[in-house]
Image (cartoon, rainbow, N blue to C red; front, side):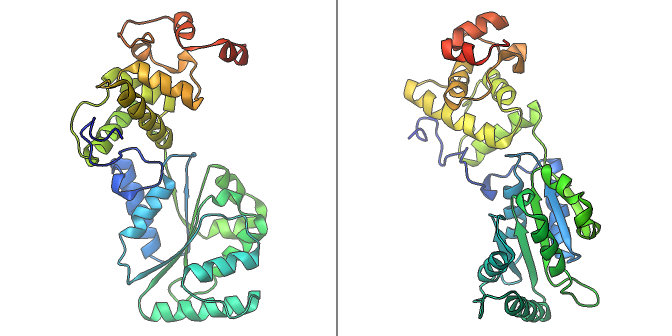
Amino acid sequence: MYKSFFNLQACPFGSSPDPQFLWVMPQIRETLSSLQYGIAARKGFVVITGEVGTGKTTLLKTVLNKFDNDRISTAFVFNPRLDVLDFLEFVLTDFGITPVARTKSAMLIQLNRWLVERSRNNGVCVIVIDEAQNLSLDLLEEIRLLTNIETSSDKLVQIVLAGQPELEEKLSDPSVRQLRQRVWMWCKTHALTSQETKEYIAQRLRLAGTTDRVFTDDAVHAVHAYSKGVPRVINLLCEHSLINAYVEQIKPIPTHIIEAAVLELALDHRPFFLPPKALTDSQGNGSPLDASNFIESVSNEAYVESQPNL
């Protein structure tokens, strides 16, 4: 509803991982290259970790889209809370294989034969497991055993484990040390700096069809401070701010619209997360406030009671 108001051709801050809006800054380019090489080299396990909302799934989808569809076959496990049989059935089905019997041995035989055939045709087979920090240790061991399906020079299936930092802790468990030794490449995603956040927002707006000044500099500064540089939270905050600004018919979007979105989304809005430049009054007139005045301008009794230490 706000697209015409802001001269946009598309919604720039969608919640779904969309490779079209990926901003390829230097660290992202390096991670993309590492993931692509790690998958193409067919050496075993690749692990990518990062905090919630830092773009792991978007990166993975971007990398997989870089391969020729005729060459790559992908099973994308988005819910790893499965037992072994469920996991194997899901993988086979996502590869386009109909299980002939729901037993471990039968499904492994089917998978092995299919992988050998794909290898003969120079195919790359990848099992991507998202939210891998939720895998049980038993299932991790079963997944490790899948990499025993190999030729004399290559693994027939490449496995990518993507998860939050807890995945690193899980892989340090002595019971999965054999899997850890087979991790051929480690990649990480990170939160954005203040400058990167500014460029990230500008790039998404450009890709959505506008070069207009949609946010004031102070508003962008506030977005970074409240989101702590996490892309998913940046998207959420910017999307709500676009809607609110459209309702109020305000552009470019000032800081008080960002602050209102923070309250709506119940984000951590304690003022010491904001640099002084972004501390403005609730009317968005740009005059600096000290911390106590800021609290008075944006809070209510429920908020004050819920934050007794402020």
